Image 1 (tube, rainbow, N blue to C red):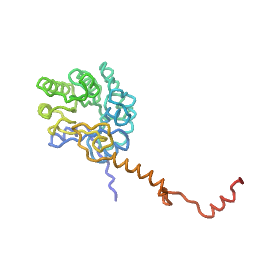
Image 2: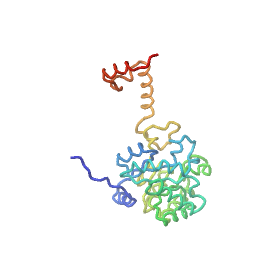
Image 3: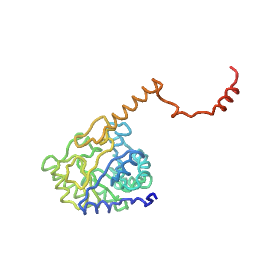
Image 4: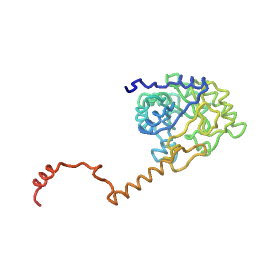
Length: 288
């Protein structure tokens, strides 16, 4: 008999429990229903609806143009696929930067309309008040510091952050401010491994690294990067586990070749009529 035991939906408390047991957290960024379904069925802990979908799914040059409506559109599909994973909805540029009121309204939209379980927002000390307001409204927040792509113009592009003592200390202050605000976890992106190690040791909440070395409590990768479905660039911190771009490209070449040679479609790919129905069809064809 098939196992009909319901799949357990993870919560923020399950993530903390994993870390307390010395286990790692796995987070993967997906963009639509099928990619989220693959991630969820693999047993990944968190599915991030990242605004990186602006580049991987929408063709933008960066995450900057992504709107709240676009994030919610993708969130609706992704949340339907997540039976096990905690769904983390990214709040895009402009969704929370002006005021705490905007932050709360955007977070509520991501939960109510998008179906996400929690939200993520980028920024350190300056954005702690926004994070705190969202948390007080009842929505859990995952923080994100280091390389924050939404503010890449301010940071001078996609560059490693915290490479010297003063900026490393500031990252620690940012992390501590977000923990104090009540965030349940924090993403550390593109920062030196030793800085990430210090932050992880100092915080009580889980750290999830993406280009932040091996000492974080968990790791995050974008699915399109890790399986080779994005060919415009590949960050240094990405490990590619497959090359689906080549596989799909070869399949498309083979399709065209088979059609040209008459190898596709064959009888097994076609719908046929009974012989008597075919003869009846011929008799009823209008005269030309």
